[in-house]
Length: 131
Image (cartoon, rainbow, N blue to C red):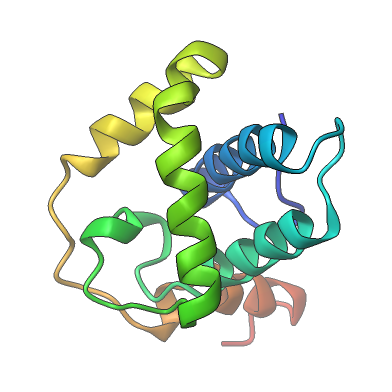
């Protein structure tokens, strides 16, 4: 299962779920065992959006999020990926699928901000916690 080198905790679990969905979609629509360039770019884009999410680890699922951070084209690509791969996740990655379904039921947190993002916390750690 693909993990992120920059994300932690719940955001990394979210990334693993997205990576599994993209792999299912790519394998069926583009062939091969490895991700095609288009799907690899989409996954990298998703990782960058998770990294900068102002909700941090309390991030709601994208469907419930009031902040629409994806540009229109990648948003449509991810929508197609999720429509195809979502139902198939129960067979190939049942734990990730059930976690995602449970996560969908959580309320959207009221608190968010730049300092909650994974990117902000990661950079603060890299700079020795000077923030």
